[in-house]
Length: 151
Image (cartoon, rainbow, N blue to C red; front, side):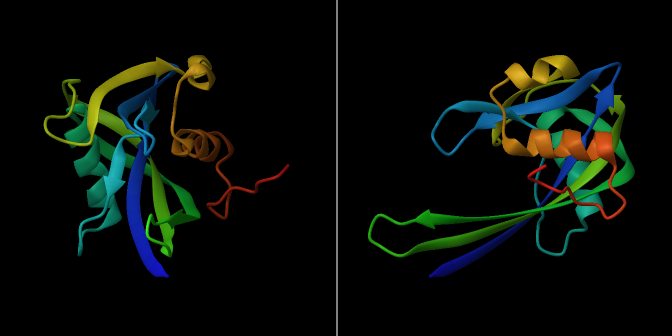
């Protein structure tokens, strides 16, 4: 079985009761909101990744204010001709603060829209799971930097 590891960094930017999100296309072709962020380039520090990705996807300059934690997800992706891929995503989540720039959609990238959403409206959004993970880490701030699930 093919194995694939993807390391990515995401920002939880909350301001005045609103969260900054970027909209992209899910694997099934539907549009969904996500935290601004994305995959690390080889040799890139995750801190630099998240700052770069926030700017690329939203137009905003940002700074990291805290490391919220890590999220590790593993999935099996079947292939049409048999076998499959054992996919492992390691996601570094930071708290971020906008320091400049202007809100705009990404040009030529994986997202098509960026915007601020009221925190109480997030449950009604079509969204990637990383949004819920990021908000839980932001709210709970677990000392060990990971969430306990199932309770």
